[in-house]
Image 1 (cartoon, rainbow, N blue to C red):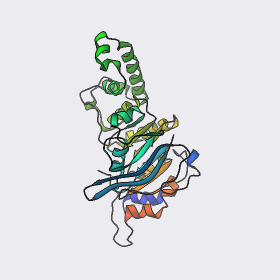
Image 2: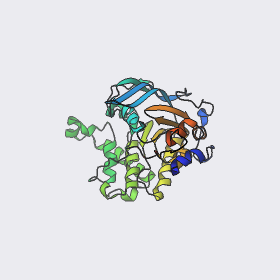
Image 3: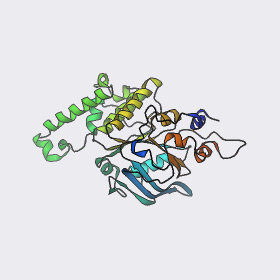
Image 4: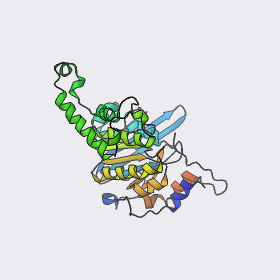
Length: 298
């Protein structure tokens, strides 16, 4: 049995630490359960690659202002699902709404402008730009990017506001000392913080984090967790794909488990750790030679 699989069984599922169940306290722990105030609603979403069915989600709702974790064994469809709803890939069928607005068919940049942004497991920092420049580039609606305002230089006051916000975010994520350093000189953990800060430049209402702890050294893990909780406490909705069960059980308000492209279970952390379908998905339902399939989804 892998260490992470064991934690599915043994991690304390109480509401201490980072949990804040709030409106989810009375929601049934079952796939497709309705939420009191969903910000994201997905219906009949499917995606196949040749003969492989990667995603088939009949119905899923994400509660506003909470941290929702997506878990599941390698190849379960978590990252593919992320790519569909964030506009980076097109599903075969189905639809989804964000803040009540249909998103099917919209490109990623339009979805981001509507307030749903995402990060990637492999960071997308521009290595030959400084930390400050990376953040400023993430701001949307900059008039200097249009031809006429660029000529008459009417963008200067706006750029000062953009720079001010970028510097505030550098300070929030403890990256001020890296302000003028190239992103390529930063550690993997620092680039994770930088990417999260850059996502906030568009003033999102929901942020999707794809394995935020992957490649992060232990010294920065707690810092990242603290920032994620702080964003939730500020009213932002967080969805994260994560394979580290200590992180999932310690920080999540709600957990959704994928297996073979489908949602097989969802609930509070304490519900998930005792759900037989989740244990079977990670360990295999056979009682004899169980396979260790709990690896990070590629």
